[in-house]
Length: 213
Image (cartoon, one colour):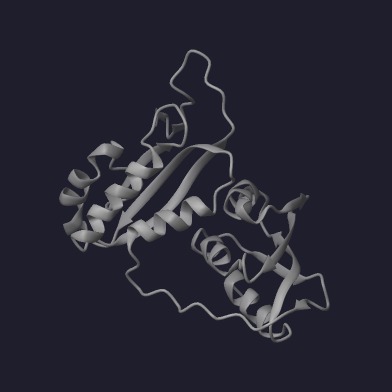
């Protein structure tokens, strides 16, 4: 069973109006642990071996994050640690997102999931159609996008404070331009660094497939 489905099953068994529940997420493959840690970072998990301990709540619902783990092909098991979750007044349920979610909103969600001290991000936007590619590359020019990772994928870097990469505010503006022209796709983080200190350099360089990015 996929992680998002496991969470739905656990959530459906919690008391009405629940506000907090402690979970463990056990990752099946050791090779996926670092990627899982990156995706789970916004939930501030504790880690022990191949398991992560975290607390879920209405203000920090992990449904979207578990769905991201599923999209990345990361398999595992979710267990409820607390037998009784704290309860309060029922909270409103957010509507399910549509199939073509605005890219600017996806960017907001992606950056909200990152650790508070993130500094450099290497990310990818996968366009819904190859027809979008030429126009999207033009509108994303401030991001210096590279056509890597797939026939409809564009990769880019963003730097929050200093270093090589476009400021996150400018990145969001670029995605607003795509939204305005009904160019759709999906965003995901590939690599992330936090709290870096640049000493006489523009910042770190990642090497993927034998080339610097």
